[in-house]
Length: 92
Image 1 (spheres, rainbow, N blue to C red):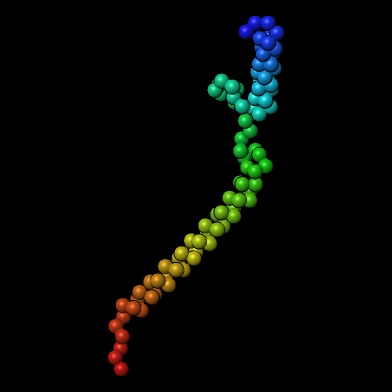
Image 2 (spheres, rainbow, N blue to C red):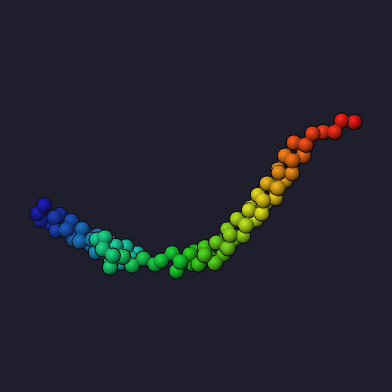
């Protein structure tokens, strides 16, 4: 392409490349897969990460504890029921 159309296209592509570079810098995305260029925030440092570790994980642990207790009680009840069913009935 030569002339004004080619020059305008080159200018637009140059601006687009510059804009992409700015977006990558703002998002902290790596551009060439190198570790030193990778500057994303760690999950635990974000608001959602703090909520997950400070509120959600304790709730999950509490729920798992409740489930374990209920399963223990259920198992005990099933064992008692099996014992009662295996005893011969008394004839009257």
